Length: 412
Image 1 (cartoon, rainbow, N blue to C red):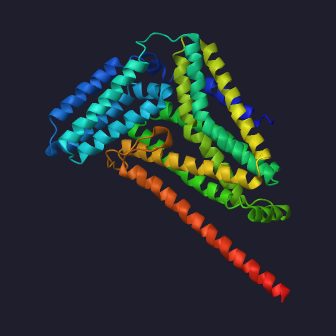
Image 2: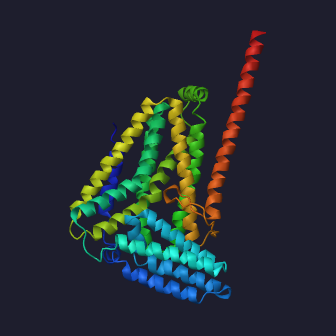
Image 3: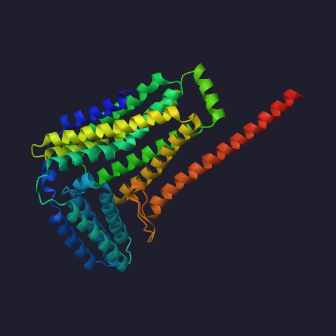
């Protein structure tokens, strides 16, 4: 096994701790006691709903927006909750998004009260499950938390990077693998720069940060969709043989190589800055127990290296067409997930409206949220995929007819 994947995550570990001055020290230590924060949010939300009417819709919407950005986020609760349970954090974000948008639109008071009740339940659940009252965590508690941060945030990136490396090797372009690692390296530098800028250089508002995350996710989804389709077009045995034959005569095109590097960059960058900030908070609140953070990082690196190795083995043993179909499918699924999550971030920041769809299931890890806008975005991805699939089928049919005509003319 090549050591590229291990080197990649080894650099992450070193860079995280090198850039770990206590940027979030206060939040990391004080933010663990969420009771007072939630009490402030509940009190403020109850007051807003008491005064709510269609005439005060904008005032109420702005009030809930302030509760999210000025209390939930600024207190460090949103950050620390994301560090421990990203699913619950996303659920609370969705709840705030619904309250802000429904009240802004002058929604039905009964619907608002119902959604507020669900949001309060989620907030109190966060207090019950994750508030520690400021007590320091034990060695293994910190180690497990450190493991989960890197494993959770890194698994998608390592799967994409491993699949791209395998693609280049199987297509006879092994010497071009450096482009993938260059994309990863640039993403690490960009992640560190972004984390530093967001917290040390300028006071970026919470809404701006959510918008940045949302647009990054949507850009990543677009690139994943493009590269996934490009790989899928090579999955057929005939198309693959033609592609390999072409590669024997010329190098892979610069445009395709750039796209592959861009996918590697975005796969790492989309969560890179947040991962660094998570570790800054964890290190700052470790109370001298830094070895636990290192142990957790080490375990995560081993787990991610194992995932990298499994993809490499699968790429060698699977038939070439099946491997590329599976790789394209992975990229398509991630594009769908990123689209839903990106649109949710933009809804929270107020860039995209939020139209609730009561009764529609919510699956956080798949990026499925019960709003018209997020589902329309994902439906658009499916329409594009369906159209591309139909186009390929038509091309294959035309190619087959042309081959038959050529054979017939040769026989005659």
